[in-house]
Image (cartoon, rainbow, N blue to C red; front, side):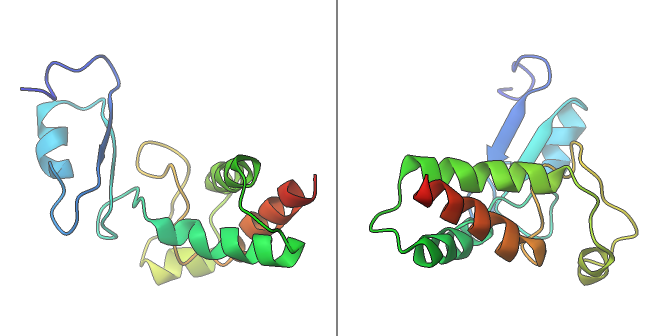
Length: 131
């Protein structure tokens, strides 16, 4: 009932693991305008701290930062957002056995095995630390 009563184009982050609060198949059966993410790798839009923490720390170490600031966290989030909008490399598609993947309802955040994360997120964090 909660899903049916949500506003147009709702965003649902069901992040409990191993069982999300609502399965994507159940949510999408109720309505087709949902943007959904879970903490699981077997569903689209896996939200996992593995996408950020290693690279946040790498950037902080590279910059010799004494603390992790909000500015550094925002830089990491922006780098993730930018990467999600770029063409997905063939090696990422192969790792997930996909033929194609592009920014949209089923791909709002990069995949954890995307090798671009190391360079792009770490660099953005280091630059933010040095500003």
